[in-house]
Length: 558
Image (tube, rainbow, N blue to C red):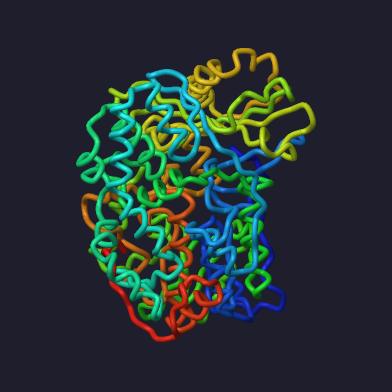
């Protein structure tokens, strides 16, 4: 995991006057304070600023990006988070992150690529993105009948994929049941109301209705786990319909943002600042201030000076539900809601692996992206049963010095917190367990590059404790694990006026798209529907709609 100096205290605002607690209060208050500069918080800040609100985003780390930040060591640029991107390199795009970037007049250059590798119990596969490349893999691996079964499955879910594509996520209006703010353009969606409703459920029943071949079911469950950290039966149909609609279209490709995920975070910051928003790093929040049932500001941690910052309209927290709860005064919370937030189910955590390697053109055949699965029978979420490896320097040579490569590996949501909870970083027991558990990366990478140890320049390993330390995430979790088959997602609403949640677990799925739309929705809670419609019109997301208004209820996933 990334290394950075401890968060130093930051001085109080100039000319600040002491308040009743003896702390310093800022002489001016923004409209909104956003806690956390991960992609969710940055999307919230960017959209709010785009609508003219005065926004201050507070980040505990020294850099923005949250799980999507990058860090440098010895001339190497390492990734800390997302490794699979799509929809960044084109417009219009169904990716809500791209929609947010467009809203603040930002783009991120991307490098497209068209295949990824898999190390599966069936063997090593190179799979092209798009329908026909995967069909060819199926014909060779499982025969023409299974390939036809897959084609029939895609034909059956095509209406769901079409409905997902037709739904501009930036148009979602926050509130119970979620609504679309599309003006006259909403009429075109009425014919797709049954498909839109189906998107609110789980993907498992849909897949099992059409697939019988064991490999195809394993394949879909693997994709579900990569998307949500959950199995086939618990993953949102909306998340999977979006993925299938993008990955299996004729011109499908994957994107890698030039400069990595840090470049995406930087673009969001630039867009927010262009519209008057502000980012403050090394500013950990200790408390959310609640007065008369309303969120009125925050108090920074002692390590950040203990400063009190007030907000005129409210607070958006992109911290995890558990960490947000710890910032709130217990007496301000309805008992039932407090218990519900505390009992939010959590995904498991990560192991991380970062390598700097010597090797240039002779490594050209190594894949940009590899997913390894050890044993289908253990279950896709079994500990250390899946590893994801990414070598982005194969596409973007700026990430490493000439003649070198960088690699990022992680175990997605399958590392149990219980193994680590009683250890302390840096102790002999911790180091021993870290070496043991991260040995899984060695075993997997040996299959791709047997002589990697002779090429090694730098090796870094991370654990759930690393994840908790650097990202301040409860138990180092991948995020909330809301199963789509057990009722709606909780959404960003809270019983405290002016307090809204965004980030992982607010919108169906885990990863960049749901986090981005959760941030946009959080911002739109402080923006009139008419202003949201105007923004959609300026972005060309209304499909020729008039300025008339209507709200179209969709599946109650919020």
